Image 1 (cartoon, chains in turn red, brown):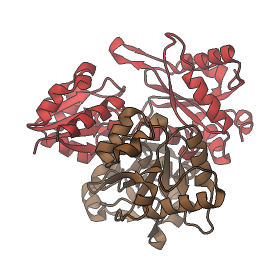
Image 2 (cartoon, chains in turn purple, yellow):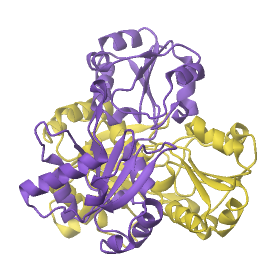
Image 3 (cartoon, chains in turn brown, blue):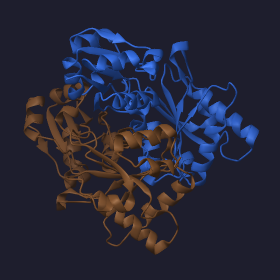
Image 4 (cartoon, chains in turn yellow, brown):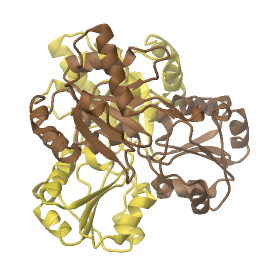
Length: 263
Length: 263
């Protein structure tokens, strides 16, 4: 039956697909891969093609945003659109889905891990203690949205997860150290007393991959470290539960005195 | 090599396991399944056992919370602990992981979809517009924590995701309608002007399963509907972006006038 199935691939490589997702991809007439909204450090297109047993066509930003060709195909055959992470974290996929519904195309969804749910657990923090999340973008010009989000969360003693700018088509990604320095720059300009060089922060690099790095420390220490290839995320904890503090010491190598100050 | 691998199974059935997770379970000497922290509507233990190719032993709350037997096994053999959803959303798994680290046991993690990342996309809302989440528990006695979380998020115009009480060992789960009525009861007692019978809410039942239901409407309408078996979640939207409003109409059957009032 003609349909459009969104299949999440998770965070690292082709083996992040679920059995259900693999079944749907194998059954599809046309298999598309979109991976410009997210980086999957270990993804091999060749291995993915072998798993699925058919040719996989990579689609770019313009093709997904325009969407007409994909929707035309899905209105006469079974189309599987494979995407990095979980399908509906990116707005562009929600938009494609809404247009498909309006054209009467049958939709199916196969979920996968997303950085949103993986990040708290990866560093040992409790998800229900996170406030709103935000993206730190390249300063062209400097956007203070992340600072405002952080200010509100810090006032409420909540943790904040920051996604960092990814411009894969330009081959650029923001490193955790740059994100830390941008937050300190925002503080220097706004003087809201939200963060300082001594603030506890946690870097999460390549979440869910075998080369995942989790590192907690003072902002100024993290700013100068190299965490390797993308993607990177940054977490600024609020008030810590004692189990969270212990987790940051054991999992993220935090200094005991530093986390004790956040209890 | 002796180790403890946490493998997420996702939200619905055994086919939610990733290829990576299945490999790790197949390679393990001992495969355990913990599914008291979460409901997976379509899970068949028999099918899961066939997929993994070995006997799967179900472990209960006491065994996981105590943890000694699991850690003893993991210090001399490869143990895979299969869990509903994503492994580290439940605090009890974080605790087990920390104790494993302290005993020098090698840890591996295979992520899976969690209701936290799936819920926003399933109903068409944008994840970065969610504030803190909370659990609505059975009123024994009535806890106002969810009301306080909602008040803060509503003031900030953010969406709120509520998990609903699950007591699987007692065979009890909270239905969405009861959760709506509890929020209205909290309002009646606290009079904070946070919600009313006319407030837009969204029910998500059995997220990620073929029988998933998404339904948006006024609180008083949703309170009387039957959404079938668990698990249920409840979302109270804050201010809507126009694409979110359109999504609630197209995906969740919301009344156009109702969502227009939330733009």
